[in-house]
Image (tube, rainbow, N blue to C red; front, side, top):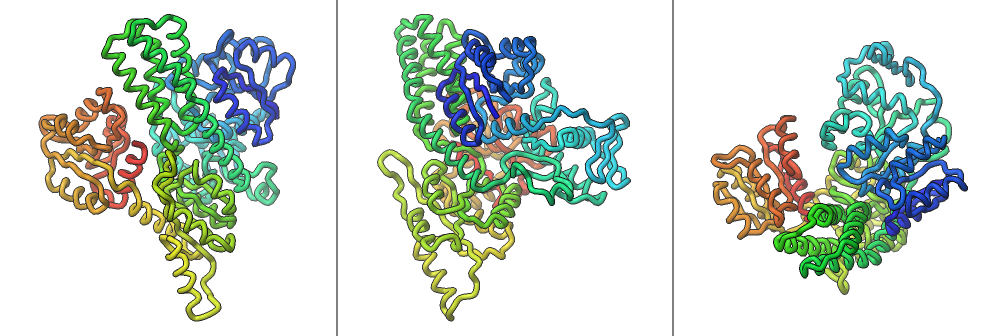
Length: 610
């Protein structure tokens, strides 16, 4: 398959090209629209990855020009955040799909595969998949002649899967297909809830629960019919070796990006200095705006999600403020300092806890991956210890699960990870807890079992597990270790007028080593916030004088505190309340009656992003 990538951000373009080349695509790069148009004349492309903001000829115009000239190759737009107009115009111009910048490399790859699998065969008027039958004209759905009572969204989901029965849909792709551009996109859990409800209704009619199956790291699709399952797949969706190759490639591209991005920061600093002195000319302003735009579109793809937001603010300052006040200059300097600090951190790809499983036991690994979806844990896999050693520095997992049956010197890795120094030079190398699991439960002598357990403990292992344990039991042990080893120096501020609730939270969090500040009267919020300087803010909703939603708005309106993670404690998770909470910028919300372990997990998930 041949792909043309039209992208003026050279760092991002080179990284994407190398990543796709690892997947056996042939990739050509054009750095402006006119160069892309010229390449189309001399090469036959299966797909074009097309940025919208391009020099010489913009992406929308190029897309329209291609379609008007009769070119029918697939076009996948690369569009900036919150540009719904660009999306609509781009699709109307003839694009087949779009990905929002900054994008995840694996999601981009999944979108490309989905587009390339898309067929041109017309579908029958009644859609069928095994015993399932959907009639679009009457909106009737049956399974084995049993009628299914579906909501409008459930019907739309099933219709989407049936019309694209070979395609995997990520959550974002489902949102793009089933939610109108005028409405705010739903939360991630909303998609999960619709899928779960649809599965339950299908199961009640006699279908397997995984009739709609989850493909880890990619999304959802219809499960293959029995006669298809018996034949070999030409393109396996979960290939541990291929996954490892791509994972290593992403880590390498991240390091390449960090090494070269300094020149762009230098341009922004030069422009900021000129601005402060009143000597910023139009050419340097435009150059700074362009570099900030490129950073906003690329930083998140390499794991620096907060960096993308900072770069976006910097771009807005240069773009919209023709005359910038001294206060704005000070704020620009602050944004640049925060951006510099972000780039010095180890980038994080996920907001969930990251578990690295080192094992070549594919059945066990896939069972763990499926179970992890319900545990707020993301799993990456290394099939051997050498690969694990190569990716751990950049991946920086929260915890490792090591298969003792993999290699003879497995214990050496436990020692290495448990004895790492807090820093090596300027690179953070924190200790990583390691759990082990094994099939060995019959030992050659009376103390063989004890001997192996002692060796694991002496090497620094945190848990000794058996492979016959259920995936949920294994992951429960992982969660317990995570709770013991997560951030213990963080500062958490809790505002709630219920003294008893504050006491319960205090008793839950202080034993973990967190520094806590509780406040009953929200009228003293601002003074307490600025004096205590928390890493995380927990708010009740209903309080006298000032409610939690108003406090969250105050935080989000302040340039210094606007990135502070905010978690709400609510009495009930009604749809209206949840929508209101997230609309004003909250990061998470937890029911007050939730288990302590769930509250702790959600708190640590937030703290990881600070």
